[in-house]
Length: 112
Length: 114
Image 1: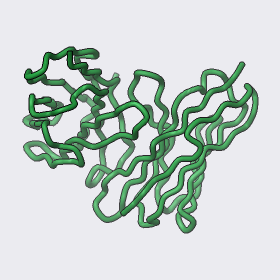
Image 2 (image 1 turned 30 degrees about the vertical axis):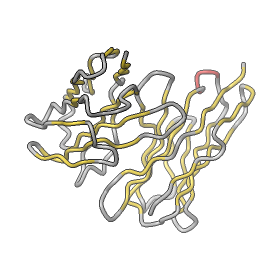
Image 3 (image 1 turned 180 degrees about the vertical axis):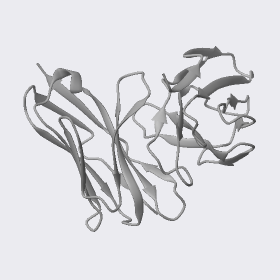
Image 4 (image 1 turned 180 degrees about the horizontal axis):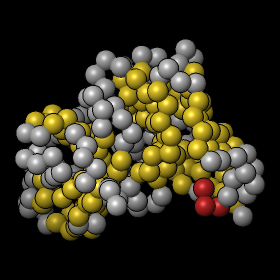
């Protein structure tokens, strides 16, 4: 059974720092992996989608990498800003049945 | 602008009442989903539909019902059989075979049982 883990559950860093959020999964037979952002009391916003054949995707200050063999993905945020404060979730789509399996998220706080 | 609209944003229900949450999308997506989110927990799938007039139970379907009569609409009814309905409910949709494309979400509906 696929399990998706995000560690740490919470992270606080000063503004301007580069940071990495982690997502690990136990079954490498995935179709794709997505990173989302959720602001308090709001819906989720898709940040990046990486297909299983890809190694990374970039959007602005965000870069997501995928290493299927090791069961890991990272979300790199460059030059962090207070507006980046949110909960970040990752989800994998299973190759077998296209079901989404979710991590519990990392709550990120960027201190001014 | 294309997107997903959920309504109402806030809803209060007395015990024993059924309530229906609306979800409408104008993205022309085939697949639609309902998730429940509780504090400190990940998203849990209630129901999903990959095509009109067809839907499947998710991990926590008991006490909920859905319909998919139109491609754009996927309403969720929280019935009185749901023992702990107070939660944040999220509707989502995507393209792709089996629903494998980028997932888009609505703004959510917060249900509180009084």
